[in-house]
Image 1 (cartoon, helix red, strand yellow):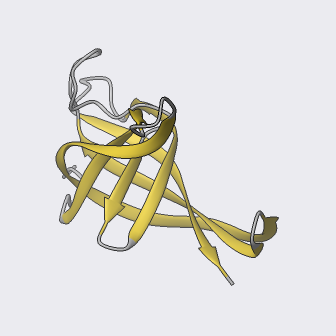
Image 2: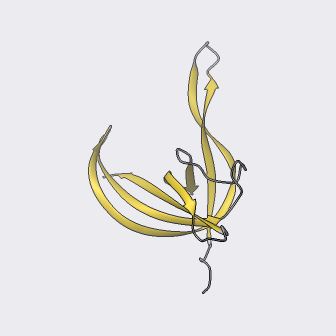
Image 3: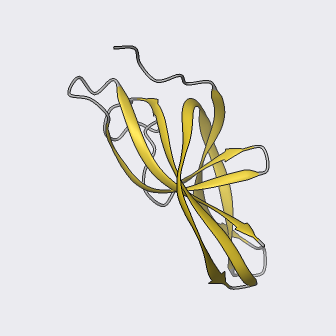
Amino acid sequence: MSGPRVTSRLVLERLEAVPDGAGGMHESWATLGVLWGEVKPRTGRETRGETGQVSVTGFRITVRAAPQGHSARPLPEQRFRDGARVFRINSVTEADPAARFLICICDEEVAT
């Protein structure tokens, strides 16, 4: 059996609190690195977001594995960016017993 086709260049990002210079903080996304992955769509739905109707599509993104605690290992609440597209990571698990790949269950939200 062949492995996944990891042909999509994905930037892994983490949310950070950054000082705003006036004693407060604002949120910013920091780049952790680039991973290559296989992006497969799942199901979608339409829902109401903060700014109106939002189309939410689920994706299964497979990337090469990294050990627990390594900065290249995706975590829930992080996200992948592919150009203008953003995939919020909901869960991460090993794809096979040998732990060669990770499966990330993600959502992409698009305002409609």
